[in-house]
Length: 499
Image 1 (cartoon, rainbow, N blue to C red):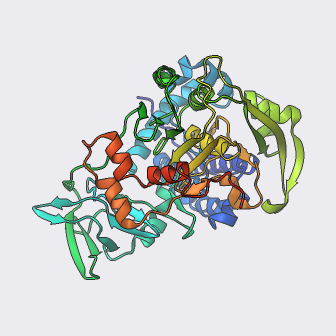
Image 2: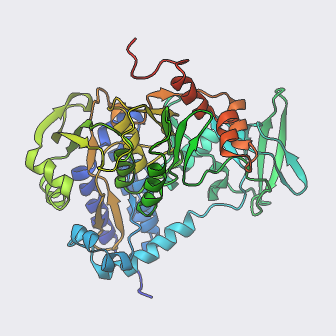
Image 3: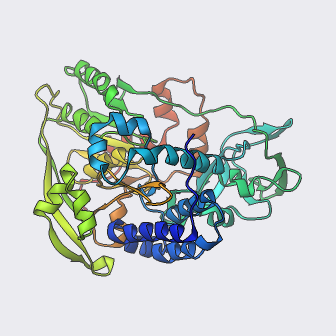
């Protein structure tokens, strides 16, 4: 095993300055984060920079660096997960990061990754929680040590603190947290599993619950033992199915995995001569992958050219431009972008590219002419790209919940190595300015048709029998699908209908 370098205080200070200078040159959302989240990125970094002298070991310094990065709450800004094998075998990645990451650093960084993973390990206590309108509720019936708790209990406190207090206190332990746009706060349904919250001196976590009648009572749990509950709710695998009662072609995409593309295309092809009144593409809880997956699927469905405007920006400086030039889309920003000050971002200057992206029907498309609905909940990265694409097209509409994570156009994050510690981090350089009028718009978290389920509807959605048929789940337990059916039947105003 390669030993971690032993750093002097001067070397730590130089590493931290490298990080700070990189953020100033690259990170495009510093102004937006301050306006929307109330996070002053540079104030946070200064706060951690002032602690560098307190780090007595390299691993303590690495922990400080990791928390400093996490405190920024910027998309794709975190410790890098790159491995030595990726560096050796992925030639595209190798060329992209060459000169900024050296192979000899990767063995050291692997130890940092393990250290951060171990430090972030959560307690075994896994009380299933649901976040709804600013509050936390028990998601399923569960038990520990023979005592049973019902779903729908509201969490008042945990070890004497409110959930909001715990999330605020531990936020820097996590590179990203879901954001509640209505209540303007971060949240986490695993707040009780954080190492600093995971038990009192007796290894207990004490919850204060409020039942449906308003009565308050305590639940005492062992932090080192899991609770017992049955995973309810319908977990839908990749699917292409014609739902005959509604004449809807239903396509479930759990992840944007290119290996699954032939499966979807085969199912779409089989529906060619069927009567289809609507297409539903279900990407709920899809954490991303490749944009090529959804682009290929849509191109094999549609009968028309679909287009959207793209407005991408990046900070205009030598470091950023040198890295952008290595990326296919990034090089277009350099070639055709124009310097522009963005008024709603305090006149910050970006190199801005305006372009049009077009998606043509595939040669073997089924030439479907009707509406396509995208069901969206808790998506990320490439899955979010489909949601933002839908917003500009007349054939595709998004239906669901406002997204808790940042979406919008981006490119492959840059990867940098700190010079002395050899800690490796990634950082996203591009900001999506498409149709943005205010700072919050750059996160692209809106859906066109937002649903507003009640707590009881969500509890039913998450607790229906998992073995019921897809058709029964969608028709009886799914508020996303119910809203879509109302749109199809004309009972609710379609997003494309002018008022």
